Image 1 (cartoon, rainbow, N blue to C red):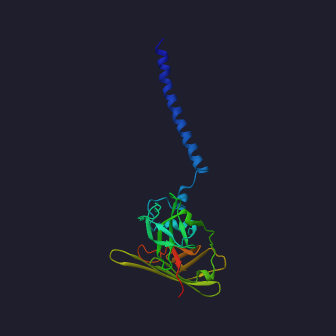
Image 2: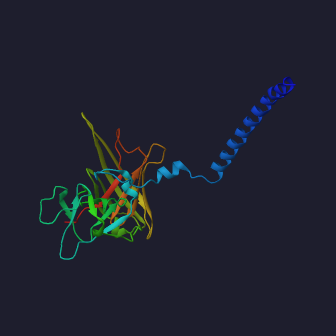
Image 3: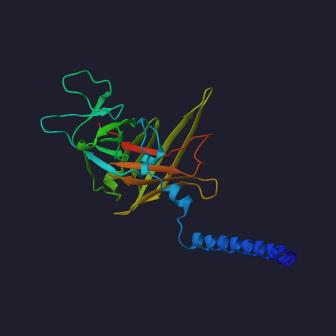
Length: 255
């Protein structure tokens, strides 16, 4: 009487295994369908990634090219908004090791990262192209409704980012000319790059594209406006090894 139930259990084992295998297959197919239907495109999400909260605020993180813009505002009775090395406010009437020598004034425009203990990491471009980075108290910043449209008056001039520069002049009707110089310092050499080209420009245009040549190896430099800045990118064909025009450009002061 005990033998027959044992046989039945032995016969049932393959059936249970097959059922479990089929369940896993159906679950996998359901997950694949769910990914295709609704889960985010992780590659796109990473491409649009904003600056992260960091313990230090040092240039240069290219994610700040896409960060929101803020206008600097000073506190009542003060003329300066100080930049800080750390997210530590200064005690009153005592030495402050976290405060930098650099400061900004009301109306300066900065790229800013996310809130971080009452501060934001900010990038400010000087007219000579030098990027200054530092934490600024949130109370010294207000969101900026930035202008992204191009105009002749805005783009004409010399634009600097670190040691790179792009000069833009008026050309034929509806066009401007651009001449750029960029370099990359190695331990032994200075790799250089350049471009000289014309680009179409009409009122309200969002992007300025300079292309030197007509083939796939031609240098292409794209510029778009972020408030008072121009943010540049290229296709990697504009010079020697590691040379790039990419960066945040500030307009030089006219003499």
